[in-house]
Amino acid sequence: MEKFQDNCDAFLKWALHNLDMRPEGFKKVRKQVCKRVRKRRMDLHLNSYDDYRSYLQQNPQEWEVVDQMTRITISRFFRDSKTWEKLGNGLLPEIILKANAGGYIPRCWSAGCASGEEPYSLAILWKEKILPSFPDTSLELIATDADGYLLKRAALACYKRSSLKEVPPEWTDKAFRRKDSCWCLKGSYRNLAKFDMQDIRKEMPQGLFDLVFCKNLAAMYFKKELAVSLFRKISERMRKGAFLMLGSHEEFPLDQVKEIKEFDRGLKIYQKE
Ligand SMILES: C[S@@+](CC[C@H](N)C(=O)[O-])C[C@H]1O[C@@H](n2cnc3c(N)ncnc32)[C@H](O)[C@@H]1O
Image (cartoon, rainbow, N blue to C red; front, top):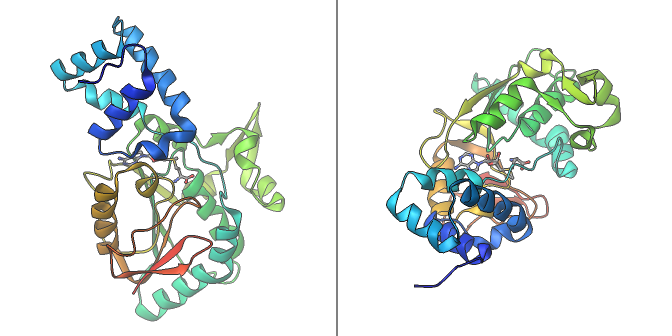
C-alpha cells in the first residue's frame, strides 16, 4: 500500500478516488482542500496521513467529513457574464414564449447553488430585464446544494463587494442594500428563489425544467462515470428544448448522453432535443 506519511497530495488523490471524484478538477484548489484536511487530521490527533487512512477504514462515517472538505464553494454573481447576456437577450424570452404557448410556468433549477449567487443572479435578471417585457409571467426557481452552511448564507443573502463585481452597475443599487461591509439582496429578489438541501448524487428536484444550471459541479469535480449518470438523470428532468448551462471550463459528455446537443460551444450552453 502506498505510504502517505506527511504527503497530503497523495492522501487527497486516494480519498478523491474513493469518493468518485476526479483529482484533475481540484488542481487549482488542492492547497485549500489540503489545509482543511490537515486541520481535521490534527483535530483528530492523528500523526500522519497513513493514520488518517486507517482511521477512515475503522470509522467509515468519517468519509462524510472528507466529502464535505472537498466541496469547493467559490461562486459570484453573473459569473461568465456573456452567458447571462445570452440568457436575457435570447434564451429566457424563448423559454417564456414556449411556456405561454404550452400553458405552463417556466421552471429553472440551479444545482450546486453555493450561497445563492447563481439563482439570485437569475432573480435579478428576471426582475430587471425580463419582467419589463413580459410583465405577467411567473417563474419557478429552485436552487439546491448539499451544504447546509452555504444554504444558510443564501438565506441571509449578504455578500462581499467582490462577489458583485460582474453585476451590471445599474442593477447593483436597485437590487442590493449596503449593510456595514456587506451588500444584502433585497427581499423582492430573494423571494423568487426557493432553496433546498440536496446531494445531487442522491436526489434531484421533481418535475420538468426549462433551464438547468449545473455549473462547476458534476463535470468539474466528479469522475466521468458518475458525471454521466447524473447528466442522464438531469436530462430526464429537462423538458424538450430545455437548456443546460455548464461552467466555462467544463465539457458535457455528448457521446454518452445522446439527447443533449451543443447549443453554444463557447458559452457551454447545451439543449435537450
Ligand atoms: C464551485 S461551486 C459552484 C457554484 C455555482 N454553481 C457557480 O458556478 O458559481 C460548487 C457547489 O456545488 C456544491 N456541491 C458539491 N457537491 C455537491 C453535491 N454532491 N450535491 C449538491 N451540491 C454539491 C458545493 O457545495 C458548492 O456550493
